[in-house]
Structure formats: structure tokens, C-alpha cells
Amino acid sequence: MKSDLSIAEARRVVLAAQGFADPRPRGRVDARHLRRVLDRVGLVQIDSVNVLARAHYLPFFSRLGPYPQALLDDLAYRRGELFEYWGHAASLIPTAHYPLFRHRMTARRNRIRTRARQLFGSDGYVDSVLDEVRANGPLIASGLSDPGERRGPWWGYGKGKIALEALFEAGDVAVRDRPNFARAYDLAERVIPEAALAAEPPATEDAHRELLMLAARASGVGTARDLADYYRIGFTLARPRLAELVDAGRLVETRVEGWREPAYLPADARVPRAVPARALVAPFDSLVWNRDRVERLFDFHYRIEIYTPEPLRRFGYYVLPFLLDERLAGRVDLKADRAASTLSVRAAHAEPGERPAEVADALVTPLTEMAAWLALDRIAVEPRGDVAADLAAALGERGA
Image (cartoon, rainbow, N blue to C red; front, side, top):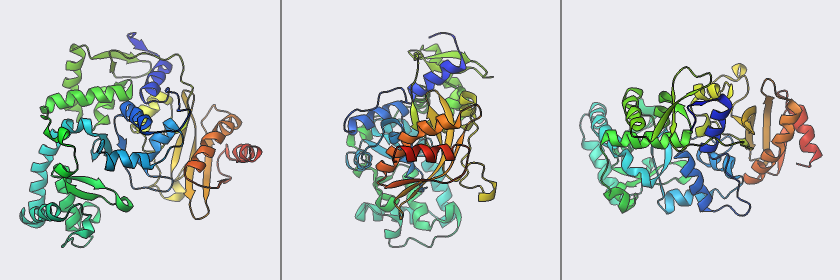
């Protein structure tokens, strides 16, 4: 690997690491393809917003095209190949990596017990919830005998949900299923495969090293802060571990054109000659988790405007960046109007320097695929953004 990277080279390294250089399946998508994506990205974020599709389903669509969403549910909740935990945020993570999070569970168990005593006056209620899960699990919070009312701290959770989340963070319970997107909790030993539970958990520093290596392989190239953020490791904890990985020859320190801080990449990383990608990238996709990094890489200023009052939004409510070859060339605000069986393009914008007609033409296939994947019969384009008119015309010409 060369010692310095141009920004164009860095983009290609990142896109390849995130799986956008891999060829799409030509036939039926199966579990092997989802495993390949997970091997690239390391984990996928879960989020409750469902204006288009649940967040954890979308990264696979971006890289594979249409696929049966039940495949991911099967890997996570039937086969036990994935588990839910706090990775980047709430995430689905390969169960093979479960031991790398045991130190986090142990640390949180102590803090959470202290918090529970402050909230409930003793450990008694949390212990009673654990006993109830042991006897009757899997359980959702409302299925507890004494779930409490939804009020108070922690997003208005009732005391039952607070206790279950405390036990989840401590690793005492795990998520067995997601009925109507609610977590159904069961004892960890009844959810996590025995091999993962029995594996000797590495010491905290060793776990951090391995998580940082996973972050480097998934990121392609990143600064110390970028790599620390991938699995939410504190920067001051990550920095000495990165130095150790460089000394061990597993990472290479490099410079990226225009970046003020040094960067790191795996020692065996290669720069692809080109990445001919075309993908709608979800707001919670790992490619765009780190907004500062996205701006450094693609000169693309991106913010999720879900919590911005509508009159103050620049681009829309649920905006997906559009990856065209090696650049983020535009953005579209999408909504699945299930009652009308319509994929609604509420706004479509091209980035400065991009030709709106070219962006519109390139968007037709991804939008058509997405509508079919979500079982929506039509696509409707609202007249917002400089791409909207060309996109409506292009969709009309192709009968989409």
C-alpha cells in the first residue's frame, strides 16, 4: 500500500471496504449474500423509523438489490447467526463477535445496577423481572406482570422496560424476536449459541484492538476518531490500541489528501481501479454514519432532518444519498405510501456540479427496484428539487 492516498483513491478504498465494489448477485439472493455484506460492514444499525423500510433491511438492498427481507430475520432470530446489542448504536452483529462485547456488558452491569437502585430503591425489582423472564420468556415489556406505566426517564419507558433494557445491556437477557418491532427478551443462554457464550471473553484492551481492526476493515481508511466511532469506543481508549496495531503490522498509518489528521488502513488494503456503483444509501447506513467523514470523503454535507421542523428542512424528512460511481451525486426524500401502494419521491436534488438530467436517469433503476422490493405498484414524483422534473419524465418514458 502506498504511503499517501489521494481523495479519489480514499473514496475507492472506502467504497470497496463497504461492499459497493462487489458484483451484485445475478440470480436469487440467498443467505450467503447477506453474510457477505455483513462480512464487509461488520454490523447494521437498527432504528424504529419506518417511513420507507426499517433501517437494518436497507443496507442489504443498497448492496445486493431486491432480496427477501425474511432472510435477515431468519439469520438474526431463527438461526442465531446475529445478535442484537449496542455496537455502533442499537445493532445486529454477527454472533461470532459476541465475545468482543462481553467487557462492555460487564462494565454496564455495574453501572446499570447502580442506576436501578436509584430508580427503584433496590435491586429487587430488576431481579424479579429477570426471574419472570426465566420462568416465562421470551417476553415483551408489556407482557410482564408489573410493567409499570410509560412515563419518567429513559424515553418515557415504564419500569418494566427500564429493567429489561438494563438486563439486556448487562448481557443477562438477549433479544429472541421482534414481534411488531418490539423486543422480545429471553435469557441470554436461551438465545446466544452455546459456542459464543462459552468462548473466553478477551480482556478489554484485546477486545478494543479487535473491534478497531474490524472497524478498519469495514471503513477502508479512517482517522483514529473515525475508527473509534465505528463501534463507539472512546477516542482516548482507541488511540493507544491503534498505535499497537501499527506496531504489530496489522494497520498502516497514512495520509489522505485534504485530511488534517493521519489515517489508518489495513496493511493488506488495495486501491481499486474503479468502483462503478449505483445505490440509494439509507440514512443509517454505515457508509454515512460519520457525517464529518462523509464530508471529508465526498464533499457531501449530510444531516438527518427527521427531528427538524418541516419549514426548516433543506432536503426532506427521510433523505437517502445517491451513490453514482464514486461520488454522492444527489439525494432523494422517499416515503413508502403503503395505503396508496406508492413509492413517493417527495423531493430529488442533485449535488453542485452534477447534471440533474444525468442524476435523474441514473435514479430510475434503483427507484424501480426499490418500489418492487417494497411491493409498491407505482412511483410518484413530487415537484421539489432540481432533479424532480427530469426524474418524472425519465420514469414516465420507461413506464416505471
